[in-house]
Image 1 (cartoon, rainbow, N blue to C red):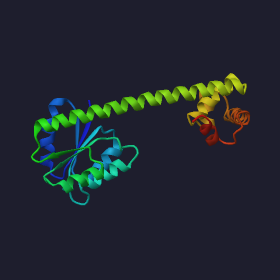
Image 2 (tube, rainbow, N blue to C red):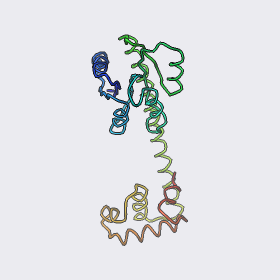
Image 3 (tube, rainbow, N blue to C red):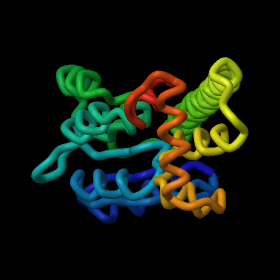
Length: 208
C-alpha cells in the first residue's frame, strides 16, 4: 500500500482525486497548501505527491523545488496537475523537478496509469536502497570482525565496540552488559587505543 499525498488549496479538488484513486487501496492524505504538504512530509513517509500548480503563498513549482532539494525526499515522484496548457509552464515544472503532468480536468485513466508507473519506479528505488543498506551492513560487520581479530580485542571489548558503533553511552553500555559505567569507559579507552583513534567519532569513521 503506497502513501499518496494530494496537495491543492481547493478541498473539492482533493476529494475528487481521492475518489479516483481510492479503489486502488492506497493510503491517501491531503494538504491544502504547499506549507502543509512539507509538514506532512516531515511527519511520515510519502511515496508519491500529486500537486496543483496555482496555490497561494507557495505554488506547486516551488513545492517541487523544495522537495527535490531535500536529500530525504528527492526521489519521491511528483505529478503536477495544472489547467495551464502551455509549453513554457511545462518547462518550468521540469526544471522544478516534476516527474509527470496532468491537465485539468483530470482524466481518470491517465491519472491511474501515471500513478501506477511512478509507484512502481518508487518501489524499485526503495528495493535498491534496501539492498544497498544490507550490503553496507555486511561490509561494516566484516570490517569489525577483521579489525577485532587483528587488534586482539577481547569478547567483552567486542561487545562494547558493537554498542559504541550503535551510539550507546557509557551508562547504556553498562546497563546492557551488566557492568559499571566506569568499567564501560575503561573498555572504551582500551578499544580506542588498540584501534589507533582518539574519539568515538573517529572510531565510527573507521568503519564507514
